[in-house]
Length: 192
Image (cartoon, rainbow, N blue to C red; front, side):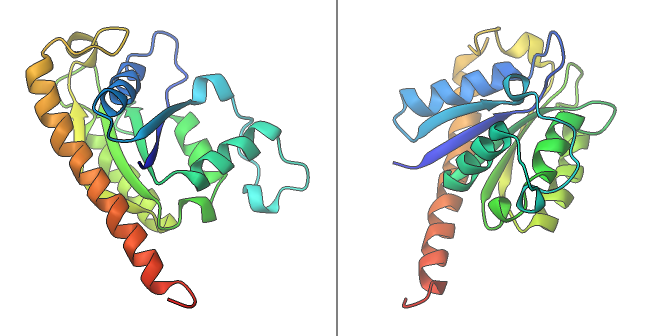
């Protein structure tokens, strides 16, 4: 069973995007599709990026733990709100502190807004960032408009039938990408 990490990126007071992280963890576990863990940047409270982890002489133990979890994951779901057309500084900080950990890592994008566009403007910025790092960005996206109306504080959807239909397609694409990357890595590994 694949190991999927769900990166909840907002550290804002009263955040609503975290509802999506809770939903996807529950969805993956209930449907027995993957092991699922939430990495909540609000709990980590990383120091501001000064240097990539691989060049730090005395790294914060929380950053080391975070890096190991990303490295060990088969895939990562990034859950982010859209702030003024971009993603939060907490997410940029967490992405940039790592580099080799993102290489060939399947990454799926879940975006949210309290308005009608569902965070669609932030997708382009994230695509460019992850392409630059060599991550494998899953083609399917999961934008959620009016997230505060679509999901309860515990992650439960207000329209389970429609939500599960879209989640099924999104997760299917993520798991296919995870399998494809694993197969590709085996073919290119020494001695293969």
